Image 1 (cartoon, rainbow, N blue to C red):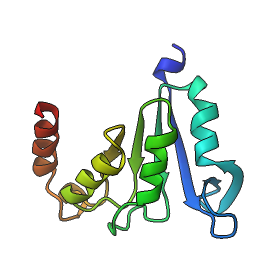
Image 2 (tube, rainbow, N blue to C red):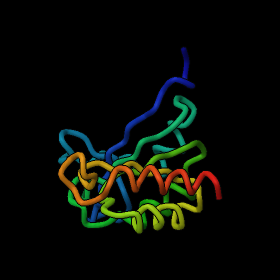
Image 3 (cartoon, rainbow, N blue to C red):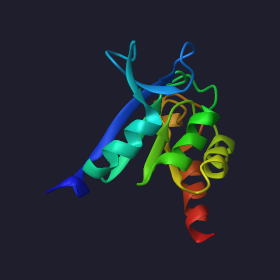
Image 4 (cartoon, helix red, strand yellow):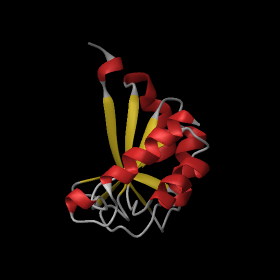
Length: 133
């Protein structure tokens, strides 16, 4: 047991009033006072990895939240996976580049098996190529 078995799932949105990205609760409607950079810095002592949802684009297949990916690369002291808005292999490349190789990504509704246009087989092949590079 212990923290090496824990992945902490954080949902976040940009708060236009305060600027920056904040952890949200209650079906993504309630902003907390905790910024994403504070959360990943302070909570990293209690988990092995973060899964961070950019809920402003979650499930929309309209592209990623680029500043959030950059923030995660800069601030997370432990492995982090970004979720939200990925629609193509180009978006995966963008996460890789903006995340400086430190941010992984997950794809949901864009996959063909969930009714999207992105081939699961193509994603597997892309991932295999990344591991060989």
